[in-house]
Amino acid sequence: MPNKNNPHTEDRVTSRGLHRYADDFFQAYTLITSQRNNAVQVRYYLLCHSFELSMKAMLREAGYSVKQLQKFGHDLEKIADELEKNSKTKVYWNPEDKEMIKIANTHYVTKEMEYFTRGEKVLVDPDQFSNFLGFWLRVSHVSIIEIAKAEGRPFPSI
Image (cartoon, rainbow, N blue to C red; front, side, top):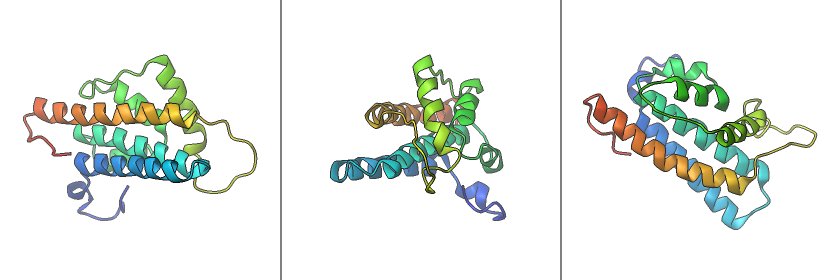
């Protein structure tokens, strides 16, 4: 998320921009995977960050301020729970989704994917997570448009 002290942050952070960045991180994952399948930590980080941004994009369109989004930090489980609670987003995670989010979050929220830590990590299968995320990005795109439509706002062109 952007600088907390910038007075123009609210105007500059849009659901459209967040979702576009989410898609960019997912495309970067796809490109790296096609060329170098062994960069596990980098690939995993790209997937998790894409997921975080796409979920925050939905919350942003549902009316959350940048400050509210920042309070979630990088906790995928907290953001996913908030999406499920919010009546505007109409998100339901099945038990398999929740388990995958929980496992993905374990190392992502602690920044272990960005900074070296010793020891073995239990990770979500990257192919399974990638398939889930590819589907989620399409669904969240449509949901953002539907939220805007229900609120009588112009459709965000994502």
